[in-house]
Amino acid sequence: MVLSKIASQSDVSVHSTFASRYVRESFPRYKMPENSMPKEAAFQIINDELMLDGKPRLNLASFVTTWMEPECDKLIMDSINKNYVDMDEYPVTTELQNRCVNIIAHLFNAPLGESEAAVGVGTVGSSEAIMLAGLAFKRKWQNKRKAEGKPHDKPNIVTGANVQVCWEKFARYFEVELKEVKLSEDYYVMDPVKAVEMVDENTICVAAILGSTLNGEFEDVKLLNDLLVEKNKITGWDTPIHVDAASGGFIAPFLWPELEWDFRLPLVKSINVSGHKYGLVYAGVGWVIWRSKEDLPEELIFHINYLGTDQPTFTLNFSKGSSQIIAQYYQLIRLGYEGYRNVMENCHENAMMLKEGLEKTGRFKIVSKDIGVPVVAFSLKNKSWGHDEFEIAETLRRFGWIVPAYTMPADAKHITVLRVVIREDFSRTLAERLVHDITRVLHELDSLPAKLSSAKISVKQEENGKINGTVEGKNGTTVVIKKTATETQREITNYWKNFVTAKKSSRNKIC
Image (cartoon, rainbow, N blue to C red; front, side, top):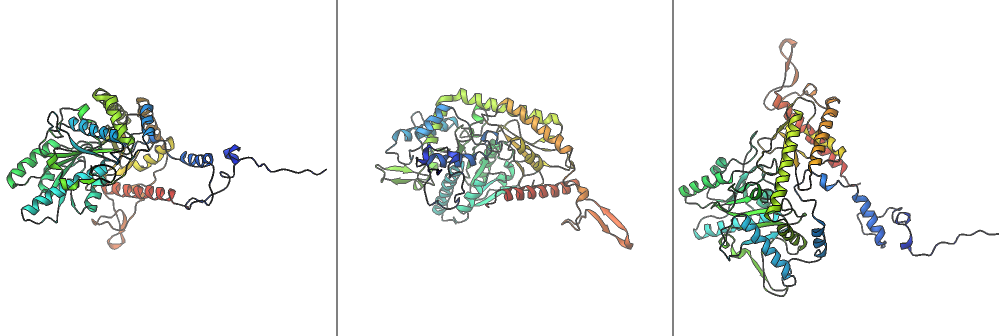
C-alpha cells in the first residue's frame, strides 16, 4: 500500500498568519518585494516590530499629546482622508480652522473689534508657525528698509541660547543671523536686558519663549516689552516681539491669566502655539496668530484657483490632513475654559508632587520653576558621586521610563539636567511610581563601582594649564595637582554624554 500526502490547495488566507511562509521567511526590508502578501500577514509583520517601540505615555521626554478621548479618535479617523488644502471641497473643515484661529486669538487677548476676524493660520506644528512668523517679520523689515533707501541684506533675530532648534533652522534656511543671549548657571532663559542690548537696526524681531524646552520656565516678556519700548523711542526703530508659546500658550491663560505676555503688550506682533502639546491634540497641528492684518504682509499670501475657487494660502507646505484641525476644534468646545483649566491645574499639581518627591531624596537640585510649563528639570547635587544624570536616564529605561538627560547650551554646558514633562495623561499614580523607580535607580547605582571618577582621570595637560594626576617636577620629585570640581564634572559629563550617544548610535545602526 502506497502512502501519499496531498498538498493543500486551499486559499492562503485560511491559514494561521503565524503558520504562513510570510512570517517564517525573511523578506527584503529596503527594497520592494517582488510579490504581494495577504493583508493579515502585512499587518502582523509590522505590528510585531512596532511592539519593540517604547510606550508613548511613558515617554516623559516629549511635550506632545499621547492620549485623546475615543470620540475624538473617531472624528480623526473619519476625516483622515480629507486634504485640508481643498477648501472648496471641504468648506466646513475650513470654517472649523477659522473658528480655532479666532478662539485662540481671543485667548491671547488680540485687539479685535466686535465682528473683526482674527488673522492666523493652522500649521503642522510650531516649527512651521515660527517659519511663517519669521518670514513676515523679515519681509516687513526689508520693505521698510527699501523705502528708506537703506541696506536690507543683513537681517538678524535676537533670542536666547535656549531656543528650540526650529529657530536655528529658520535662521539658516532663510538667511537670517541668529544673535543668541548666552545662558549662565542658575539662569537658563534669555535675559531681557542683555537681549535689548543686542538689538540693532537690522533686528527684525526679538523672540521670547513662553516655556523653555530646557526647564519649562517662562521668559519675562513684559520686561522685554518695556525695555524695547524705551530703546525704540531713543533710536527711532520699531523692533517688534514674537512670542514662541509652543508649550506655554495653552497653559498661562488658564493658570496665570493675570500674567502679561501676549497681545496685551503693544510690541507683541505674533504668537505661535502648538495644538499638539498642551492644546491636547495628537502630533501634527500648530497655530500662528498675528496681532492685526498690517503685521502680515499681503505679498506673502498666495491665491490659487485650480481647486475650484479663489483660495488664499500662507503655508510652507501644500497638502495636509484635516483631522488634527477637527480634533483641535473638538477639544476647544468639548473642554471649554473650565476643562482646560482643570487639565492644566492637574498637570501643575502632579509636577509639584513629583518635585517634592525628588527633593525628599536629598540627591537632586531642581532647576525648573513653579510658574511655567509643568516640567520638572533636575540635576544631581553631588558631582563627585561617580555616576551622573546620563546613567540615571539609561537605567530608568529598564523600568520603561524615557527620561532625557542633556547638557545646557552655552555658557552653561557643564550643567547636566534630567527632565520630566507632565502631560494630561500622566496621573498621580504614575508620578508616585516614577519617584519610587528613581529612588531604586539611585540605590542600585550606589551599590555599583563608579564608572569614572576623578581619581581615574589622568591627563597630561589642560587648556588652562592645570594638570590632573601626577607630573614630574624638578630634581625628579613628583608633583600632584588636581582639577577643580567643576573641571572634573565637565570632563565626566562629556565622557558620559559621548558614551551614551555612541551606545545609542550603535543600537540604531542598520544591519
